[in-house]
Length: 84
Image 1 (tube, rainbow, N blue to C red):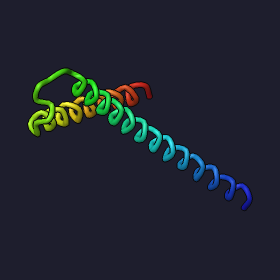
Image 2 (tube, rainbow, N blue to C red; image 1 turned 45 degrees about the horizontal axis):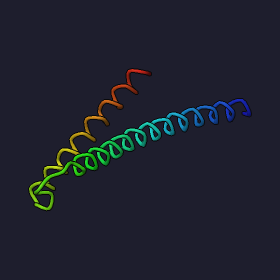
Image 3 (tube, rainbow, N blue to C red; image 1 turned 180 degrees about the horizontal axis):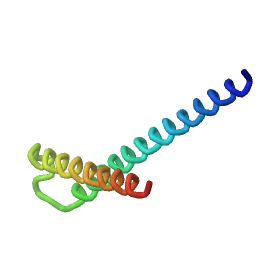
């Protein structure tokens, strides 16, 4: 009975480790996406423009930063999957 209990506990520990690894990967991908999105928007907004206060320009900056963030998040996702 003790061996069966230890085997079940070992299986539970392995599944918990897999779940933790998946969570860490997801957090890493989201962090890279958010960080690159923020950097992209900061770089775009730092460029000298006469129309920085217009809503159209801000929407364009937002869309570019989200696109860049998604691109790098997908890139990290692919590289992490390829590494395993």
